[in-house]
Length: 183
Image (cartoon, rainbow, N blue to C red):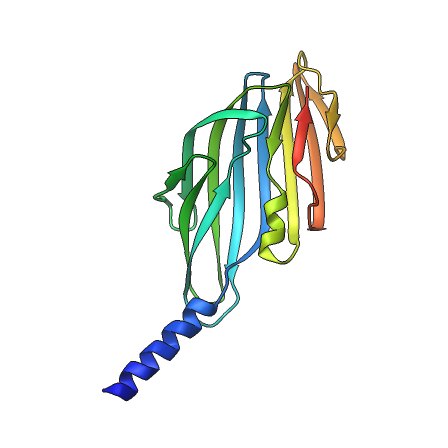
């Protein structure tokens, strides 16, 4: 019996020691001067040979924004909304990934702004211990809202009807600051 318990504990400690890999994000922000709406797609992978379950904390900016509402987390791989735990400055959800597999999540929220800037948090990427393989960000604003400054200059700008779309594309991206839009 003690041998079986030892094998179980060894297996559990090995499984819990595995880390999920966060390797890609594709985020669209919509800014209208009153709200920042975020819709992001996030890829997580498990490169080990055991199933992994991990709690993910997703922070919200609080220095330029007010209340966050309309939060949704979808596990697109499983086709289901995922339970979230909401805190004052973020939310938590679980990621379960089978060995050598990938999961795709969609996270959406809306934040009321209380200043002349909006923030999308990027600096927490460092906590994963490695850069993102691919990162793509889009900002959509009405052409009547003038953006004065970005913390990262956009790679491209498209103007479609009465909409400005700014685009950032990065590979092997380890951000050293958040993405801030000053308007």
